Image (cartoon, rainbow, N blue to C red; front, side, top):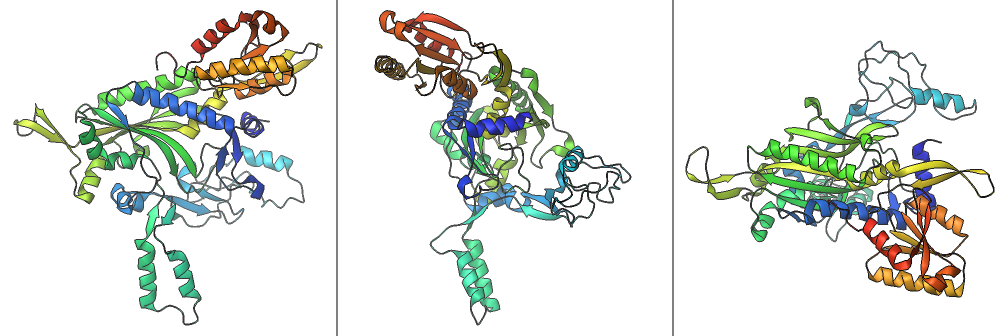
Length: 516
């Protein structure tokens, strides 16, 4: 079983991630985050917010609606250009994006490792479509089906990546269906009216959180009295109707983002791009066990979005290879300019203390340049789970060998700071544990009080969800107010007075780590 399989199994077993609507067969590419997954995700988001907003005087927050005026998406270019080239394989019926397939020479010998692996496990009675022989001419397309290597492919067609919805008391789809069902049919005039109603009530779930920060630029700048340079940050859900969903929560149709738009004076944008690349890499390294599994990669010219002057990807070494975790893009003045033109509103900045470089007169009005660090919260969760996943062989008290699995999560990302464990289910021990738990919760500590199963199984459970410390309360604790402190990563234990154990845990698991 590979690492991803272990992670997926662990996520379900320990309440981190479940398939959405699983009792009804699940819903493709949608996931529910259980108690432990939600806690870790909230901690990642809190650390990002603390670093990007709380520690800075020039970055403020926004929580915008997930449905915006349709003209927002027309002005931004999403309505016309937010689409992917969709191709169907006529051999195996797979559906994929052609722009994500490797381009190969026409006479290239195609070698798909996963096809070989699949063939070795298939039986003669398998209903899987026939795999194409290993030597396959690529043909004029320059690519083949990623599932079966076939060149028998449909024409490319554009697929809209935004989820459409409808606003208003009348469902235009139902209205259209009723019209089509009627015995008289629908006249050309009637069809035109139904189509107009459909388009008039259409809206979209946002495919990104960024546009609201551009649209609200003027309101936020004026209401908060902000001076350039400044940033607007936002966290929240976005929706993309992906052709291909893959790698568990890495690419899904509903996901969460952590984005910031940083507005700066023209001529300073490259300095700020370099600054934010370094800041964001340092943030990931702060929580990583394997810093070399994170890297910064500059986009080639043919990778740049139409609005982007430059872009860097922070990539993580996932089990399938290097892939995007966060983008730090120089968006220029594209978005503010487009929304200003489309809405007729001024989305510019006036600095009375600057000289206009064109006229050489006092006062400088300009459209700010924008640097955008845009991170995926759900991708960050997956990356930190993979980074923390650890196994080791240990020897049990009986002398047998056993594999121990634990998540070596940074203490500030862990779902609990400490587990409080009465050694046995005893009224006196439970009462003492409950008293300690209440006092520590009143101090702001996030903890789990757990008395079910043997203490060894409870240790194992908390190791697997990443709880960094455990406090065990036994009969001796009742007489001398000492407890046993257990360390997740080493399994080492030490006897300490309760207050000393509390101070140690608080120091090492503060909500925000030293340095932000």
